[in-house]
Each structure stands twice: as C-alpha cells, then as structure tokens.
Image 1: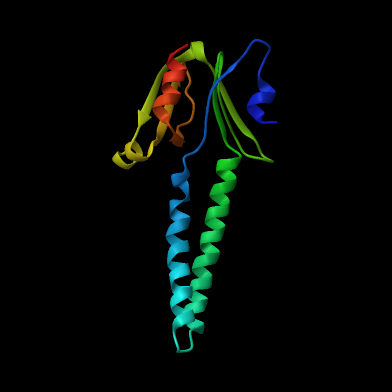
Image 2 (image 1 turned 90 degrees about the vertical axis):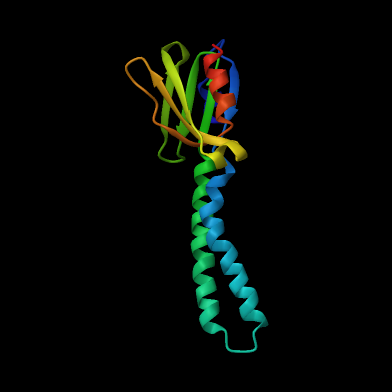
Length: 152
C-alpha cells in the first residue's frame, strides 16, 4: 500500500496523484546510447577492440548506475492532492514527507521551460501561510496538479 493511501484520514479523498516525469532518465540515456553504439562498432571491427570495449563498458556501467538511481528516486516519490492537503513523500528507508493543508496554500508557482511545456513537465513551488513546500522538480503535468490544489 502506498504512503499516501496509508495516511488518509477518515473522510479524506484522494483527488489527484502525480509523479516525477520520465525525462529524469535523459542524463543516463546520454551515456547508454554511445555505449551501445561503441559496442556495436567494436564487434563489427576487424581490429582488436579491447580499448573500445573498455570505454563502452565504462559508459554502460555509468548509464546503469544513473538510470537505476533515477528509477529508484522516481519509484519512491509520491505526490498527491487530497480533499484536505498536499502530500509529498520521497525515500524508501529514510523517508522525507511534507504535508500542507489546502486552506494554508497562498499560491502555486509553476516554472516550465519550452521543452517542459512540449513534454508536459515542470517545477512547482507551493507557498503557504508562513511556510512553503520545497520546490517539486520535474513534476508530470504541473498545470493539472495546480488546478487540483486551487480547486479547493
């Protein structure tokens, strides 16, 4: 059972749930693609390709570590809007959770680049009475999230 479902209080309903956008995998893919290309070229080459295989192995190992890290971060992060509050939780063993009552929200700021607008992701900063949530980065569908927060 997810963290968000476990912390719902009686009478509270889950209105919207989102996650970190898939574009967080882009840096790892920038290492993966050249690694695969180098392996294919080295295998087709008649010359001794041991140097290029080492380069490819380093690229592929780096890509695997980066992709696995981002997958785990994306998988263990929950972002939701309920009928009473905003919930943001990240982490697996060491959990970091922030909750803000909807009646304490003053504004929801969205920052989207041109690429973010095209692919449907952006950063959100929620400002509350006297306090604010940390910026939520690379959030999937930030406009829909904001609409659910301000719909109260």
